[in-house]
Length: 161
Image 1 (cartoon, rainbow, N blue to C red):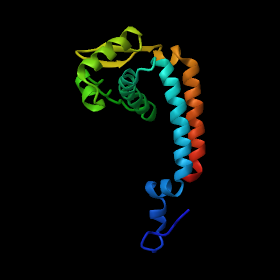
Image 2: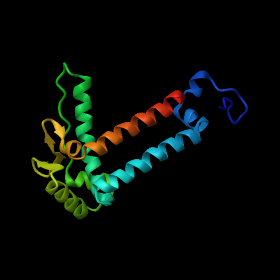
Image 3: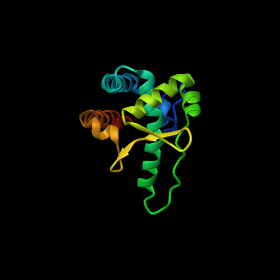
C-alpha cells in the first residue's frame, strides 16, 4: 500500500484512513470483490424480475424506504421513529430517470405480482405479510444467497477498512 502523496510527502494517519485512499491502495481487491458480488446479484435479480431492469429499479427504489424505516426501528427500539413517507410515482420517475408512464406500468405489474402495494394517493410501499416483505418469503432461496454473498463481500473487504 502507498502512504506517500503524489508530491512525495508522507500521508498523515488520518489521510491513510480516508475512504478514497483505502480504495486506491486496494483497488484490485475492492473492484474484484464488488464485481463478483454485483454480477451474482444481477444474475439472480434478472431471474426474479424476468430480465426487466426498469422493474427491478422501481422495486429496489421503493424497498429502500422500507429498509430505512426498519433499520431506524431496530436502532431506536425505545423511541418512536416517524415513518418515512412512501415514494410517489413522480418521485420514482424523477430519481431513477425512468419515464413516468414506464414507472406507472412497472408499479402496476409489481402490484399484480403482490410485491408492492399502493397506499394513500399515489404512494407505493413494499407489500408485507407477517411484518416481512413478501419478496423475502416468495424468493427465500434468492434471499439466502443474497445474504451469503453480502457476508462474503464484507468479510473480503473488512481487513482493508
